[in-house]
Image 1: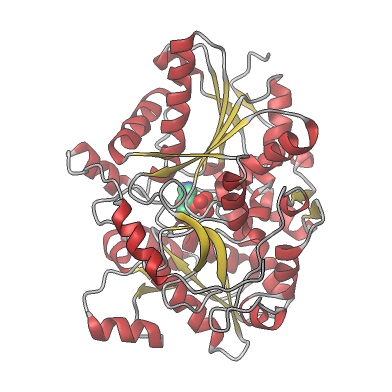
Image 2: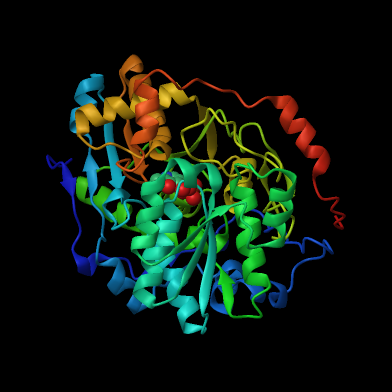
Length: 457
Ligand SMILES: Cc1ncc(COP(=O)(O)O)c(C=O)c1O
């Protein structure tokens, strides 16, 4: 075991390939269905939204997919990211556990999101895409894609959930600084947005609605614009595995191997990015790390949602996928400040929870912010509220190890920093946040609106 606190890698250690979980899934992938016909989608349908290289990655079963050299060169602006042993947090908790975190907040935009934004912009540029449309919630993803668009000279059109657009001007300014065009969603730029505004001019929006608008904007562009997604789909998770591939090398340097690997989950991308290379070791090399996905009790897609076919967006324009879902019409409760608001979950991750290879837990908002403060006051970094869910779970593991007198090696993903989320911290510090349990009845009701899928077998 090493005495170091930071475990860094050389630029030349930057992984040359992403790890593709499709090669190792212990179950057959569920088909992706057309939202209108409910038949398996064709590449033609997906081709309206995505360049062919990304569609091929979505279905590839090659275990490793080369990272294009141009993407690796850009990754070098912030990668390899450090792995840090949280010695001061360990001390504050008085735990015998060893806590490590992978610091993805060192990217130019402050989160893991550019790992896929840069890759998606690269493949779109190569395919001749003239502009990209996307959705963003709090703005982390929109800023990552705007940054990538600036590098590849692709205009970026971002539909930002209206409530965040109004409450979080700094992320919008960041996107605009990179050259992104940002619209509050629902907007008057799309048929779907206009129909919602006609019903309710004060509509605050949701991620599902913003996805619908971004998909519509690409679909009606006659091929000029494509759509880019920040999480949930296979190619996005694939690009994020650069995180875990580096972490494997760094844990080797620390001369330890994690007993438990933890990440927060919105659509699943930062979690899968860190965890899938360790899942690979579990599935193929006899390792036994526990793999834990953490979500908020306010948006519990895995722990309270149902594993079934559902639309990826609210307007039912995006493909239907088999996943854990709270229902495509889900709008997060307004008292929830902690991010992670998507109604569904990545299909591979949903399947791996269902098959027992990944554990899922949910943590309440107040305990999450409490953990964020403990972390900030010992390690110095103010985490993104999303990442604080992983910190909560890591602290709980460390306290459990302490209670049992066990040495436990804990690895979690610090998916981003929270310096542009200080409004949420302000609400927490002022005692204005509450815990919220998403009601089981709301899930049951939403299940009545699921697509009626009729598949053989
Ligand atoms: C910092 C940070 N962490 C985590 C997430 C959740 O997304 P995902 O589950 O795709 O990693 C987000 C989403 O915007 C984020 O900004």
